[in-house]
Amino acid sequence: MERLKIIVLFSLALFLFGCNKGAGEFSITGTISDETFGTGLDQAFVKIYKVPVASNTEVFVASQTIGTDGKYHFTVPRERMEKYIIRVTKNLYFPIEKTIYFSELKLKTDNVFPLSTWAKSWVELKFINNNPLPQDHFQYIKQDGYGSCPECCPISAQDLYGAVDTSIYCINKGNTIYSLLYWVFNTSNQGYLEANTTAFDTTQIYLSY
Image (cartoon, rainbow, N blue to C red):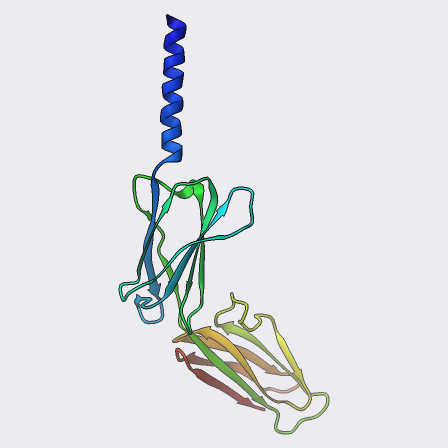
């Protein structure tokens, strides 16, 4: 009799555990903010992918275009997945990618993941050496400005020599400061330059030496 009770309880536990693991849906939601203008990211395109366990293959699940409030919402079946990936794109904005691991998700409540991005802007670094000599050495290094994207200009010191008449274009977050320190070696000419780079446009920082 005691053995039968144990078997029944064990079978019931397996049944409940199996139902809990195999059933239900995940609700994945949040607000995507436009940090440049302090609004929701209106008309952004949002996609969600799933990646099965022990696989590098991304499987497309769903997509949507969000409204002025910036809210997105996906409902996905509870499956044995390693992770989900959310990607957000909008023209002239930095893209967003958010990885959500299976272990982070809950069944009985919304899984809220707020996201944000910035409008793109550009700075033109315009440098001109008015009286060039072969030994002239000009150096600059970025102080403020976006530096964590594939399109961003380097954060390390940059060197130019001799005759210089060049424009270097760097991407930045819209309506934020881009600045640099510069030195013309063997002269007293050194200093600091900055500009507020207008969203969706190119702003010039000019230096002649």
